Every structure is written in C-alpha cells, then in structure tokens.
Amino acid sequence: MFNEVILSGRLGKLEHLQLRGDPETDNCKCYFDVASSYYSKTTEEQYTDWIHCKAWGNLAKRFVNNARKGMLIEVKGRLKNETYNEQERTFVIVTGFRLYKTAPRVESEPVEINEEELNKNEF
Image 1 (cartoon, rainbow, N blue to C red):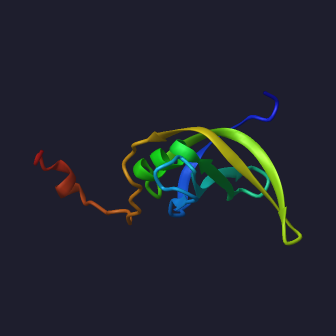
Image 2: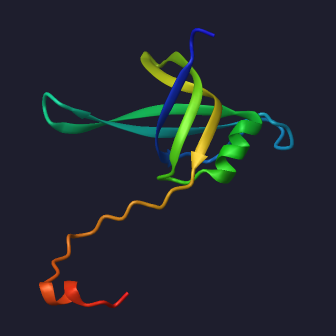
C-alpha cells in the first residue's frame, strides 16, 4: 500500500458519532482532529498542525466509546483529498488507532521553597 500514514499526537475536538442509515448496522462515521506539535530550530518556536481524521463503521463506534479529548493517540490510515464547494480539504481515512492512557497535563506555576522547608523530612 503506497498511500499509508501513521501519525501521533493529542486528540483534539471529537465530533459526535454521526449515524447514517440504520443505527443497528455499522453504517456510521465520526470526525476528529489530532494535534501534532513540532519545534523549529530556525525560529525557535513551537508549532502545532491539526490533522483532520475520519473513521467509519465499527471502528468509529469503538473510537467514540473509548477516546477522550487530550489523550495521546496513534492513528494509521491513508490520505484523501476532497473538494467541496470549491474548497480542497485533506484528511486521514482511519484504518486503525491506538489510544495511550496517560496522566492529563497539569499546568502549574513554579513553587519556591526555602532551605528550612527543603531540609524537613516529612515524607
């Protein structure tokens, strides 16, 4: 298979599971975005790319039942270009995924500790 993509990043906005046709069948789909960040040595800044993904059928149902915003995710699929209303979009058709259960990121301020507190043995 020549058109194969493997991407990893954090799960962004998860659109709700959209059922098409009979809900009892696997004829459903979901859309989600994966944030992939990288650091540029030339500008010394961090950039984030948002990659649009689409999953179909039973894969979409399993994804919606298990995925949560902010989770670390690895997606396998193929690239697809689509033109709609004269706008071209590129997204990944998902053929498989792996979710990693990691602790959520906590942004906190640095805490200053004086030497007296540092020398206390309160473990």
